Length: 147
Image (spheres, rainbow, N blue to C red):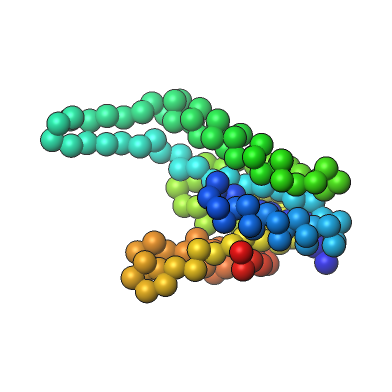
């Protein structure tokens, strides 16, 4: 059914549960998995009464993001059996959902498989669902996993 699965990872507990289900589906179809991690291209900028401004350089921010992405990829790849082909892509995008969609197009994935945090009520309103945004805007089919 699917030959190329895009799996967004975040490093939270949901990633591990999500990967278990993705691995099962990949084995059934003999599919390849591409892991994607999306980083904000802008470094953190902080200010307060005590400190006028503290800004991390763009180069330092990108290095930190790349190092963290490599760490997450290694951690996730360790969970995936060797008989499944795995690739990874690190995207810099200010919007996580758009970054996931861009990654799916770049690697020609035929499905995006991701979990949802299932936020409801006021939490759902303020901490919008990335999965919901991906579903609304992706041209690639999206499979939401009940992790």
